[in-house]
Length: 141
Image (cartoon, rainbow, N blue to C red; front, side, top):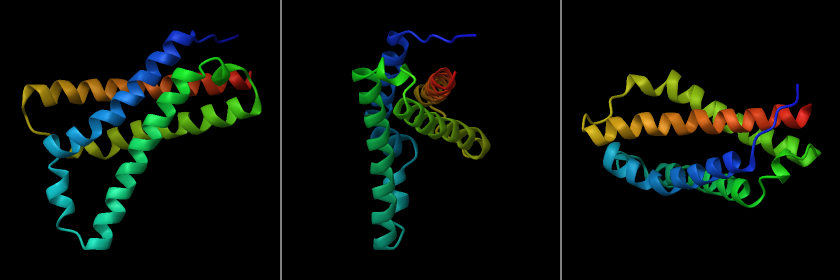
């Protein structure tokens, strides 16, 4: 069975990934009060946590750009397409697994906008994991 993912779905996923990169600072600040928590760490640990936050933003943004600019290349079956879709798929599957395994124990503020946003972000994460996992499988076939 041949799987075919239209370019527009890949591009939509790319736009969503860029959105997650751009919205992360707001979520960290308004939803999680992240910056005040980070201030309680030792200076070196503060910088490490901030650096990892930037890595996450940078990866999400970069994966989004790749999807928007090179959707056909992500499904052409080359070794690079297999490697890249496998990497991005594993990234998002890991994010979804972590999201559902560890994060539900924490409460987000009960404002309606944050509840809706939580469902929206989870939908996006599952969407990204699905797209890249399917692309990876499609490239292997």
